[in-house]
Amino acid sequence: MTAPPKKLIIAIDGPVGSGKSTLARRVAEMLGYVYVDTGAMYRALALKAVRQKIAPDAADALVTLAHDTRIDLRAEEGGQRVFLDGEDVTMEIRTPEVSQAASKIAVNPGVRQVLVAEQRRAGQQGGVVMEGRDIGSVVFPDAGLKIFLTASPEVRAERRWREHEQKGDAIDLKTTLEEIRERDRRDLERTTSPLVRARDAVVVDSTAMEPEEAARLVVMLANGNATASKAT
Image 1 (cartoon, rainbow, N blue to C red):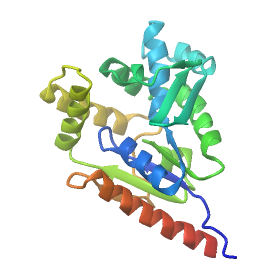
Image 2 (image 1 turned 180 degrees about the vertical axis):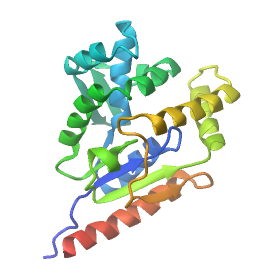
Image 3 (image 1 turned 90 degrees about the horizontal axis):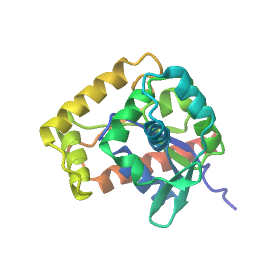
Image 4 (image 1 turned 90 degrees about the vertical axis):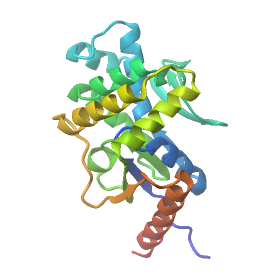
């Protein structure tokens, strides 16, 4: 009997609004893998910090908060649910306020150390699709497949704007584009785990690509890598 292909760790990195979550969810579904949204972990911690009125630059307080916080990502029918200390906060972590707070908290080295350890535990057995901004470069540098997903700032801003519009959030497209560019600058310039493309990552530009097309491409690459890994 032929053994099944080895289950990989698939790392999907890229800037905000590039479609990482949509791609990761679809790839996980197509391969029967577990989807791990690492950004949701930072958002959940940011939500707790906002609730407790802890400033994004209060470094020591945030590290203490991270150690004292339990964040669970559960795959349920209809998608992943995010639990913060047992509370379902799946919707609450997607507000613009929490998004901005999360991007600032994510530059804290101590916070990243705590959450990266959790991410490694979640994916160490393989068979996972993990997305974020430093998965292939920091969290899993030996991942079986690394994808760097990108798109133009204008397209990413429009996607983010439409996402909030569908939720009934009144945000301005021009302001969203400015926030996207500021977020890019912050992610690229941070000293701890900056947004970089791993040298062995496959670049996928989704500017003019439909989500399903991108997902099929990644699944094809994953199947090829899994077969090659099994052969060696």
